Amino acid sequence: MPSHGHLNIFQRLVRQWDAIHPYNAAQVIKLAGRADLPAVRHAWHEAMATLGLGRAHVGRDTFHFEHLNGQMPRDIVRHVSGETLDAFLSRELNLRFDDRDVCPFRPFVLDDGDDHHVGLIYHHWVADSVSIRELLRQWFLRWHDPERVRREPLKLSKDGYWALFGPRIGRWRLGGELLNGVRWTRRIRRVRRMSADHAGEFAQAVTVRRFADGLVDCLRDVCRAANVTLHDLLLAAAAEACDRHLPLHRHRERHDLAMGTIVDLRPSARADLSDTFGMFLGFTTTLCRPDELLDWPRLLATVASQGKSHKHSAQPQASFLRMAAALAAGSFMSRERTINFYRKRAPFAGGTSNVNVTDTWAAEYHPAPLLEYVRVSPTGPMMPLVFSTTTLARKLNLCLTRRSAIVSEALAGQVLDTMFERLNRIAQTGDAFAPQCQSA
Image 1: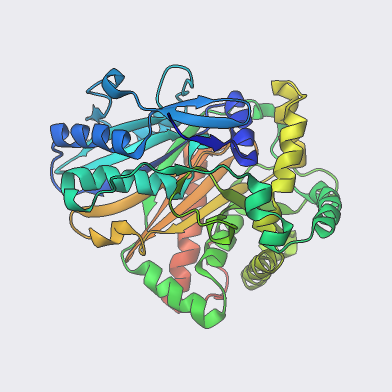
Image 2: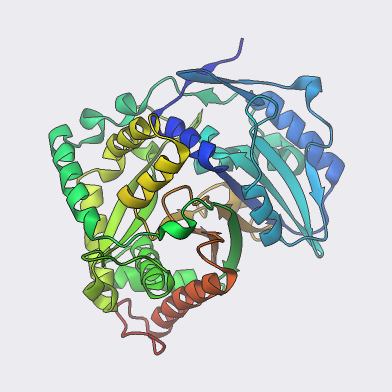
């Protein structure tokens, strides 16, 4: 009898977003040498069977996995050659999953010269980054280090967000957050938003860029000296690039910029979720005024200040109140009205997702055979692009996912160039609050 998990508020909201456009994500590892396809495919089948995963069946309040056993095609792990990783990921992010007919994971092997990529495209509602990292780990171990594999099924949570991250557990105040919601409604009226021209076009494209090896070590040292976090630095650089290049609509008093950040809620949960497969994410919002966006030291300072405030007031845990409001609103609106709702009520310029996998299993097999770890996030209905940064030891890469009708390939290049220039300048000067870049 399969174990049933509770369908939490964020999973329901993401499934609502998925009805507008496929809400898929991906995680990929790059491995040295050529792939042993038979071994990789056998390992996938074994991992799915042992971990208790397979086709997802979704009810009103619960979901469970049905292992496919002999129904799973032997070639379900696709072998891709003659295509770049960026092009493959771009296509897969726009390819819809069907709950009724297929497993919510699309595993693949992609050739890359003398090396290869192994990864998963996944239906995002079913799992967060932590869960997919564990699934990818168990798949990898079964052909590379079988003595260390997990031999028990993964757990599914039977608790919702209120039980796991509610006011008493999450240390936030319901009354205070309701008041913050009123303040948010007022403040958001001053934020730039996407034009209505392409608001209904959601096709996504992916670009992966690598920073120079060791740059992340230098940035960490600089941040430590400046009493800011690496995430503060990356978020501020992303906001600066969005402000400079994105075609956001200014109207009357709409001159501010809003950036969203996805946060892993597992460490703050009432229960230990380290062994649980599912989705447990919250978010924060960082607001920047025009005068701050044109003054790098002020921009970094305000981003860092808001980051500290978010942690102190438990904003990620309390964010499910806004999720509940969005879920309720979307339940009564048509697709067109829902799209317009997000464009007006959640006008983010961009989103950020920053993860360090150096303290995870990936570091044990790096630099050989595991060369690189890449994460890909979807944009959803609220924002034109998302920055997903991943650190593995001395390596840092950035995956930019963009809505191609709003952010062209050329424009994406300008955004990335501006962000890279800012971070490289900080590393060169050793000063997080270094003066403006020369091209500013």
